[in-house]
Length: 568
Image 1 (cartoon, rainbow, N blue to C red):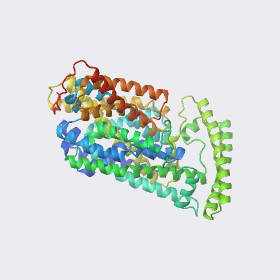
Image 2 (cartoon, helix red, strand yellow):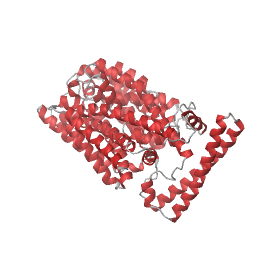
Image 3 (cartoon, helix red, strand yellow):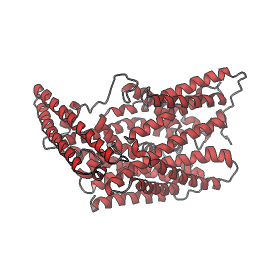
Image 4 (cartoon, rainbow, N blue to C red):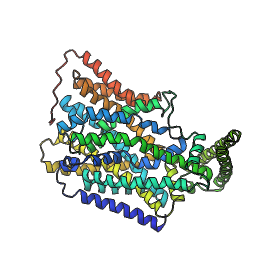
């Protein structure tokens, strides 16, 4: 990167840190540290919700996902708007009425302590693992740009995030996320404009869309039903609905965002607006990745996008592979121009002829690319041979003008900081409120819990750094995070739905039903019976059905305890 890029990058990041520290001044208790004394307006809640969900993984990996698999990933979000409506009706009023710090406090009043603790532990496990993956995403950038060892880069990135989160609390997270998202949206718009601007003369946005369509990259809606297909309209609407319902309704990293709102109405507005904004936002990010794919049809694409890894194993054999790959690249450039020309002139025969040749050149290039990946794996067994997460980064660093490169890199850092800070904040709040305070120190003064919250933020930060060290083998990060969440979210959601709507079912039945359902979900996943989105629906339904059966089998069912606001 140029000096101008480093100035933009450094200035943006330092400015965000100072802004967060300034906004968080005066926090002295848990109500301020975790809920900001419930003072947030709805638009801050909205941006905080988006900022928590849209991590560096979103802006780094999603364009690469579209590059390799087209835009069908957007179907993953189709169930989200309906989930927002359900949460606004069923979840938000209960949380606000009980004035809870975490979603899991409610479960003890409704069931018992063991159910509350088990649910909190499920959340802590999946959120900590997901956060470790999110730390790895920005570490990729520094490692790629500076040639640093990825493990030490994870330590540096995680350390900066720990300092940022421990010092700030929820107010710093929420307000900095607002500023971060403004910068992110501006930067991503500029990146989209630049990728179209850099296309050859005479090739505009509409021309690029037509080429992308011919190359099957605009596969926004897939109607074919297949249990093992990860992204189609059925898995998106049904599995995506259950996943979004659990993520936004029971995951403390999101619940903690809208619990900061001034009122139920402000929380609902933030969630409903998120339902309206998220799908088109993700569509545009994936469309950016599709445009990058078209760009690399017209211009030379590297045989492997993680060029730092490529340089580690460079040699005569790899040079020969690169030469062969460049030959197919040149053929693609010829045929994509012929295809575009035929489309403009409505020459159907020319379109068919050019597309057949372009498809063949693309297939041949992919075979050579597979050979290169096999060579990298053989030369360096520890190498990360999935470069999906590097595609957008490669385009940014090698094609955008000075200054804008620094801004786009800053965007990925900002997205990481916003989502990871919110996650660490939620991990600390759940640990302190649902486990430490409930099980070990129930009567300590509020100042003690405030200090413990900061220490637990620090401890979870260290744990997530350790997880990040193993994230290089997970492939597409955005998919890995969602797969991981799907292993737990359905079961957690099932527990909450039983709590809300199955008043005759008690704590013991739902506790054992949740354990059994979680085991079954993991077995189904390992057996690869269905795609991961369906695990959310399966886990939820299993908990409800098994809890109902177990309750019927109890010889003397007890009376379900009424909802209480204090579970201590």
